[in-house]
Image 1 (tube, rainbow, N blue to C red):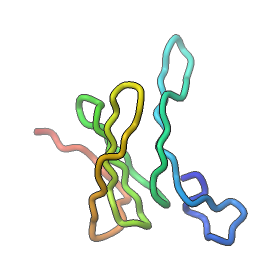
Image 2: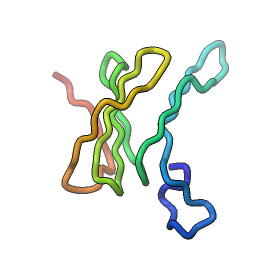
Image 3: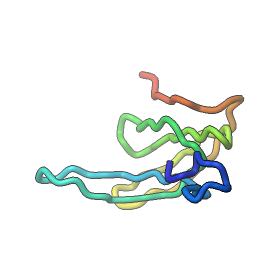
Length: 93
């Protein structure tokens, strides 16, 4: 959340959260990509091939869509929802 869920007057407030992708290799964890996301983000889901990532943003009432090419994240869409997206998942075909 990166402080995006805190009140604006809080010293811990940040104007956005972060989507961070991590990799486990040889027993070590490393950051491979990072992209800004909305406020009070909850719920992330990967497509079966791992190339599309959905992130729910409670304050914006949106689900943001990211594409992952193996080295960089790119935001490709923002989908409006009727309420805060506290959870998100991918359904089987």
